[in-house]
Amino acid sequence: MRQTSETASRSSDSPPKDGKRRGFMRAIGLGVVTGAADDDCSAIGTYASAGAQFGTSLLWTAPVTLPMMFAVVYLSSKLGQVTGKGLFHVIKENYSGWILWPILIAVLIGNTIEAAADLGGMAAALNLLIPLPIPLIVIGVAAIILSLQIWGSYKLIRNVFRWLALVLFAYIGAAVLSRPDPWDVLRGTFVPTIEFSREFLFILVAIIGTSLSAYLYTWQSNVEVEEEIAQGRTRLEQREGATEAELRQSRIDILIGMLFSNLIMYFIILSTGATLHKAGEKNIETAAQAAEALRPLAGDAAGILFTLGIVAVGFLAVPIMTTGAAYDLCQVLGWKSSLHSKPQNAGKFYGLIVAFTVIAVVMNFLGFNPMKALVYSGIVQGFSTPPLLLFILLMTGSRRLMGDKANGASLKALGWTTVAAIFSASAGLVVSWFL
Figure (cartoon, rainbow, N blue to C red):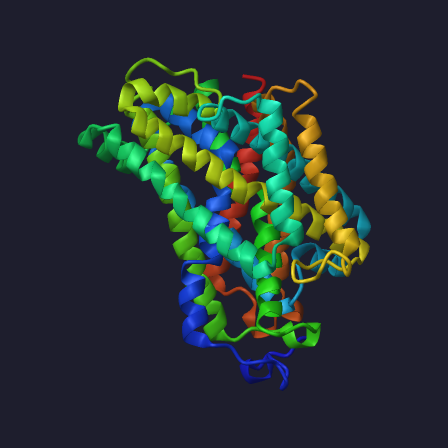
């Protein structure tokens, strides 16, 4: 049974926090990194395609998905803070293997395929600026990412991720350079447009599925544990429990991060909707293709900014996917997993990071179309995300696990609404293939 008193939620020898400094750094830190990782190369390709196909009429999807994104990421954050454990560690302790393993396998497959597609997307974008063979760029990018993960400290990795996240503001610049029509922007933002066509349903489902990817949940719970370790809480009993002030700070941080993510999503749709759609360039299949197509329509600067955003977010998202997959498998198998540990002390954890990265690289040499890979990844994520979110909601609503930090009525309502929406999106994904 968990302790329910806020004063008893931390052990007596738990190191204190530097509240003001940590609060400010969190506000520009963890949530923004998670939000930026949500706008990975596949997401950029999806949003660019949405704008190219349907113009500014899909801008309303950004504010609509915001509360859902906040709900799932905050619930994952709260679970990590209160239990002191990663998501799959908690699932393993509370559910049977026949529930655990199918979800885990689906998440691992989805993360690896999406990491592979993101590496391919980054290489294609870099190829617009650097005239080298794309396979060679894939290998070089993967080597740089692995070097950071294996030999960089957690503090270094966290700070690099923060700076990479800020590069996504380039999409605001790209949208401004596209010179959109103000009335079209207002109408697309505040007047939802829905078409009952296969193309529209597919892109709408893709937007919802991309913005609520499963790797966000596992990463957020695990990074909360890493932050606790960074504060000196190396033992589980020191990490268990969370004060109301800590959870309030998390809500602020995650809200800022999800606002950031949605802002970038909004301006990507706007930049391609105001240029490519109007010019009749509706068949955009990759983020790099969108960047190249923007150049003659909105100027070289817009195309370069779009390309830089793809590369920066890829450097952020790929290690989050591969490290997240390693976290998940290690927690289920009972292996040590922490970016604070040196490779010699957590060899299996770092070995899995290398393995998932190598698989992702190899997939780029098998002749797969990167967009088809993303579609298959989306299908896998689409089926793994709804049950995973369901279990997160059940666990964070349990007083046995969460004590007095169990979900309140408003969070339950938002959480169940999100579960219903994402289950509907998954069903829509299946139906769209038969229309």
